[in-house]
Image (cartoon, rainbow, N blue to C red; front, side, top):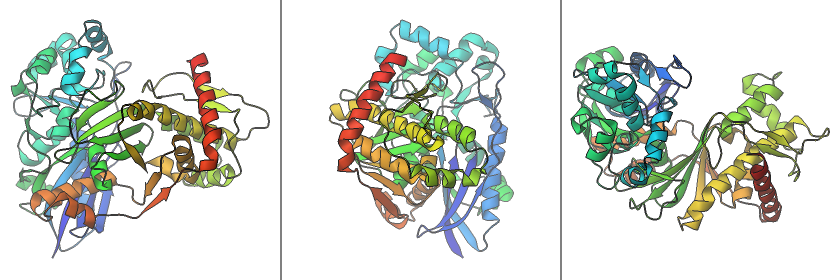
Length: 490
């Protein structure tokens, strides 16, 4: 009988379950169907919490159906943060889940900023005021939907809603709780002041337990439905970005995670929750590793601009052949110096997903590959612009670990290294949140004596891209020109 660990990645669009043995070898994996988004009003983005619960059950069951003679000792979850599930005293949802993509609380946030709340909320919580976080969303319910607000006795993040369904216990972890913007970043406890701002009490929230702690056994009915081993333990997990960082070994200052999907986010590491050194553009949260904190900034949908161009310019190729066609053509391009792209979505100063952009300096002789390269370079310029405040604050940035769709283009990672002057690591794996969660499952259940031992067993190969010194001056000039165009057109 093979003893195994189950890592689960509950993302924004689907859920993945990955089964590993105690030596870090992947045994099986399964993914749910994409969730459906509902937009009952402009700017609203809701999902059905029951659909996400069934996606979790399905992905676990489908993964376990692929193996025989396997005993799952423990599982843990890496869960997207910021989404809110209002529920009654029995834990039953009284409203659809309001996702982190939802913008209904924009008016609340603007009112709070005008009243000066940003000045104390960020130092206390680690987060700037955003309409996508649970703090303003709860306040929106209090003001605009009193029926749901009065019916709600518990406000779950998605993580603790799923924890409750798996174990019957109302428990959350520091990083997913932190993503609700209701926690004191210094103490790791629910904040009475932030709860008062939202209009709730601390009793309306799940209990915070340490990441890596055993929450309890999976309920017998869930084991029967999924095929999980009776008695399997649920170990407290974390936010998906923190679990990704853990899986990659990004647990010390100087190491930076660059997640390059449709949206881009960079995440670094601090050993103390020191808000005094933190640039105003960065937010602070708890790492999946105890005694560590993450600093991060969203650059918004930089990947969305590239996806838009690929879908427009490479329509004749199938989805699987798009990057192959691009890579063949783009290898013939070089830094133009006169062609620039201003992102359609996101950037160093605004993670918004709706704004105007376009090409500057376009000529008849430019190819679709030249234009694709300009989009890649714009993302690199935006990243460099984003990193400059951190570097100015003496926050170390020694190496960037790049994960996500952008890694399918070998040139893009080279451009990022050349523009920023920072080495880029390309790890050879594709489900890092689940892998990080599996390490937590092994550590919490006693399969590993330490997180470091788990990391050693789960190591994956990686390739490193070094900046080319002969490109530094050219990209410095191009970056300054890019900044000039941004000042003119934004």
